[in-house]
Image (cartoon, rainbow, N blue to C red):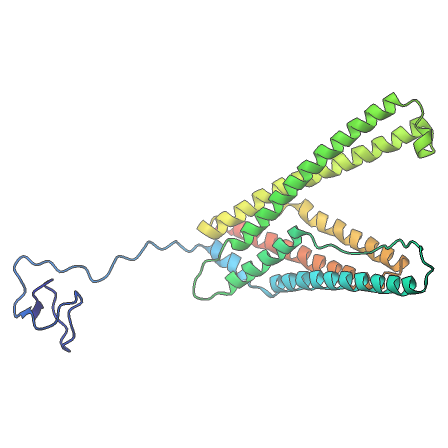
Length: 304
């Protein structure tokens, strides 16, 4: 039996036709020149799966990558909690002294607080997004949301470094004009004119060089993350992480050790666990970056 409205074959269980007409209107033969509508639409083209997709999913779902993200999370949480405890401790001590101090006594309140940069938060979210995407078993592909956050981090770093370099150049110019117009700089620094100008010049050059190097590093890393994003999307071989990226992490470990020693001298014990967690996290970051470069080098050698 066939529907008189659309010509489709009616269900044998007596249910209405898919076009909505009840089974009371039917023909025993299909209408002439009837062409049945397609019951299924063509499937969309499927992206080809390359060995690069497998390598990226295997790496981002590994225990090493998980430990890197976990330690980075612990470091940020411990630093934030330590800073909050430090603030409340200082305020409590100041309140205790204020109750017992004579009226009109002035207090200088100083905090040793670790502020979590926005870039670190974006990197942390990006790490967990990559790990969650790599752990999915229903698809061979990964999401690029985590890498996009990495790119946003580098863009913020580039903008910040550019602004800082501009301000540094402006300050250097103002200091140069002031020093050339003032015959005696000793009144401000306690040093002879030539020594004071030399110290200011060295500080200016060092600050400018470091800012430019950090700017170039962020530009290079932006290209690396763009390459990784293309690898996730179409399966092309990504770029390896540059060697100076690993060197920078080593330098940051040195800075964490120096900060921990400073906290020890200042009796800021509550901030030491944050430095220890930061050192452990950066060690795993170096291991993770080196493992990623080995994976990419292996793909290059195998000419996947």
